Structure formats: structure tokens, C-alpha cells
Length: 95
Image 1 (cartoon, one colour):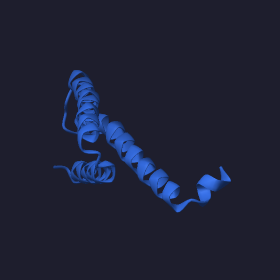
Image 2: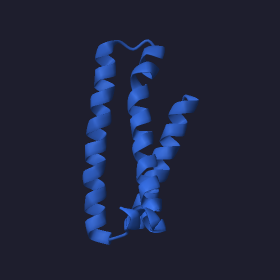
Image 3: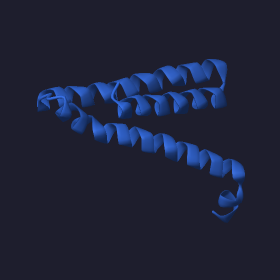
């Protein structure tokens, strides 16, 4: 473990994956309160959650296929992290 935490590349990966997971968790936890603020019922909130999970699964499959074909790991991860951050920002400002 000492060797890993002294490696700057590992630290960069750990921070970026942690940030991506934190943004995903923040969006998932705010869906209910955002839906309630706009007067959606609990049935609609459940559908939002299900669509969120299914979209994540479909996106994972698509990105896995693209990775297998083009081997652009860093580019694709930067795209995913950037699009996640932008979508979280848009949710926060209410678009």
C-alpha cells in the first residue's frame, strides 16, 4: 500500500474515480428531492430512478464496446468524467 500511495499516477486515478463516483452518488441522491420539488408523485420518482439505472447500464455497455474497438482509455475516461460533471452542474442550476 505504501508503494501505491507514493505513485502519483495511482493517486491521480484514485482521485478521478472517486470524484466520478461521488458525482454519480450525488445525482442519484438528489433525484428524489428534485422530483418532489416539482410535485412529481412517488411513482414518477421510481420511474426516474429506474431510468437512471438503466441508462447507466446501457452507457456502460456502449463505452465497453468502444473501448474494445478503439483502445482510447484516457480519452474516453476524460469524456465520461467531463460529461458527468457537466450534467451534475446542469442539474444543480435547474436545467
